[in-house]
Image (cartoon, rainbow, N blue to C red; front, side, top):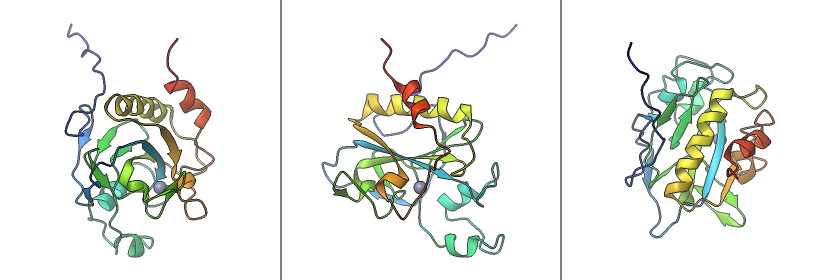
Length: 190
Ligand SMILES: [Zn+2]
């Protein structure tokens, strides 16, 4: 009988890529400012179209391949040039679009603790979902592994929601996101 594959630890390599992520390149990124330390992780929720899970809308949005004619909502968002470092789908599948060493365009106009332009110093993690539908257990599990891997590579100090860095403009990941649950999963073992 074939033995199960050994459990591999999720890790970010020196070039900023996660070993266990499916890699999809987004052109929507550039370089971080010189000497910008990565200290923040921004959690997002996204579905394209809104409330529809499992399709290829998110992938198309982040790779500039959304067809504006295929859905009424797409006319405006198809022109956006946005990306993220990571997407975690409902089943926990991890997809990486931009190296963690580079600046992905996920937070937009934003500030954290008085510091503007969060994209300069943050990692974006998108969870496939909406503000009011509970996120999946597989997503919390994978997110906690991503956070642990990021903390081993970068001097991460805070994890915040998009709504925390762009209040009044953004609501994701929404009340459906259980911060206490994430806290429990990422707390150091004693
Ligand atoms: Zn967001």
